[in-house]
Length: 303
Image (tube, rainbow, N blue to C red; front, side):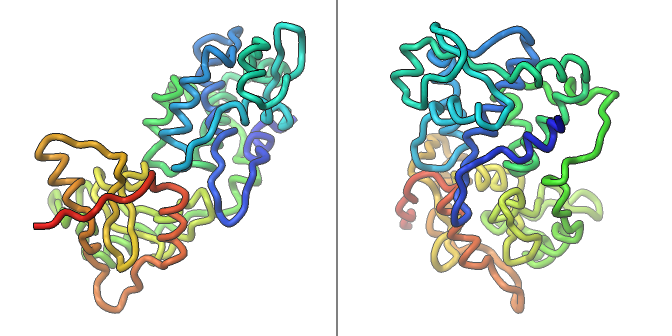
């Protein structure tokens, strides 16, 4: 069994670019749990709230339930479920999963391979992260699922990336092209810091995530400072009609720094790009608003 390829090809509902990270999030959570206790199992009623929080923070903006991946991941051959009555999942209903004592864990064959190959856990986690989430979220996501990626990737790592993950290569020119287009300043706040001859704290953000078929093209990019890149990828910020900044109503910030750096951005025009360069394409803006941005946008602050 090629476990890397199996995990890279998790069956997910898809259509019109809709994000469905339910199974990848459950797999990352299961890998983190396995790293802490290889013999442990996850009782649905005990982990439901934690999984719900993961989906709320790293999933799409609309409400969803961890019951779906807890049951359906079995069909991918990497997960198994049993109940108080014996092997097999009772279904995807929340009540039946709770009342039947449904318990899930990585499939027996996968656990055996993880025990044999100490580098496999890290490689599986890396495939899930690279395939489904932007790099700006990887560290936070590993912390959220209790996964020590540095420990998982200790020497001994081997093997090539699965075909599904290797199909597309990143364009190394993307960062330089985007930063140049926005004249080396954050498109949201104008930050333009430099250390010596090089910029510091400025990053090229994909509007439609690369992991979700977002192209390495300037009209799918924004030059953002590190703070606003993280907030953009977490769905706190977005870009709406007229290329004006959106701020989620769900974001709460009480001190002057939060107001100045986030809340007061609502309704402001994006800074850049320079004349002659295409701004963010509508299709990419709409994908981000529909798949990443959380809730409704705040009303712009008036002077």
